[in-house]
Image 1 (tube, rainbow, N blue to C red):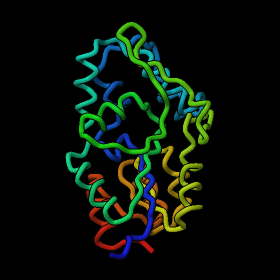
Image 2 (cartoon, one colour):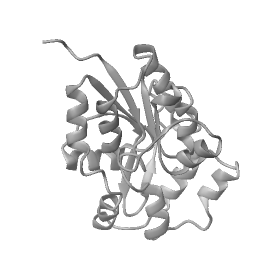
Image 3 (cartoon, rainbow, N blue to C red):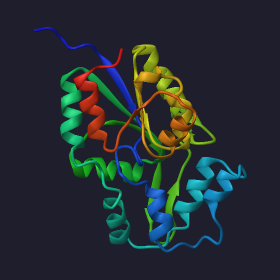
Image 4 (cartoon, rainbow, N blue to C red):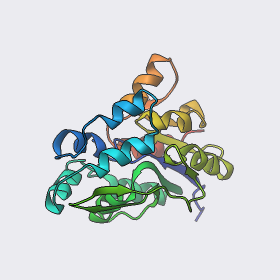
Length: 221
């Protein structure tokens, strides 16, 4: 039996594998000790992306059950496990590249019974200190501005698979999405709007399973 070719899909997590970003829900729904808008500071160029998330997350003041309920409201694609299995059977390797926190990513993936390679910022939660992010200084993909350098992960994937695919939704996904062939990028949310406004080619999607369906129906060249 012929072995399927090895292909690589690098995927963002928040807003890509899930419907909602953790930080959006946290800013909107959880009690906070913050007295200003860290995210606006980032948009205005005053602080880094990592500093914005670290500020938002550390200001959370809630208990374990409440934050667990919020994580569930991120709405991980219910078809993720099946989509991952189908892709792997067809020779695809899936790498998660996230500027978010490994703590809630692992909780969602474990609950869904999905084991994936995850590159994200470490974090520890407690009701007293919120979700404390750490820079992944030991990671081969370390970048001070975002913690994890998604572009470096995509470049490593392209070195092994020149037809590697990238999927994302936010501002930190713009640079890595530009590294893959235009027909090999999937986007929703902010990233899709930006690419559309600049008349750049991409595949729109609403759920991560749709990416898997598209790749299996017609693998990119």
